[in-house]
Length: 325
Image (cartoon, rainbow, N blue to C red; front, side, top):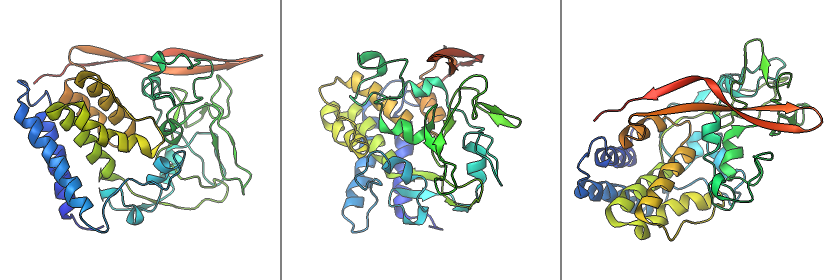
């Protein structure tokens, strides 16, 4: 903490060479670029594991908490962070991101609202996309999902709040009068709030936790390796890297895929594992993922009368990305 280490240089090299090998910067798909990118990620892993106090996934054996705790545990004690911004002691994150109904001496505004598009990317606990798992129920959409979903996003029914201060309750984003749906200076436009980075502080008797924002972390290195190795050597050599990331949260290991199939699952894995870490824009750009395509942002509305009904709607905006080489 406080200086750039050799590990940070290795991490930068891994990311930079992965970007160079990607379609935006490698339109001819030159295989040697992928080989060099794969070796850069392998070099980090090899040098790292040869040392006693090495970087590793934050993993205490609790898949329902470990991913979330990686981002709220004091950064100086977090072996997954390779380089992060200077730690910041504040409760401004909790007032900016938590659902808007939590109030006392502090009041949250809930200004970051994940979209339904992102929510739908989280697989079921069976390791399948929701449109490929017959057990998925759109009227009970948050049950039996990838544990990272509940650890990243507040949704209707999420349990939150300081129990000692009698603030512990279910999040209510029902339309139009749910406690966490809307307030004077905030609320949700999508039915969701960002949970990642938010400490479960009391709003009646607030504290100021220490926050750290990752620039490089070990989870990214493993996904860099998975992507580059899949392109350079094929899926059989790439599974070990992506499956380490999935194993931390108890998700089934990938196997038996073609290179094209695993490429799409790696891209989805990056979307959810690295969510809200400033990767998605750059990933979509380097993949030329949205070239000449239109992305419609979606939200969820909940109507509660005799039954609870989940209704998916388009947000009142349309975003077009035109990416060029």
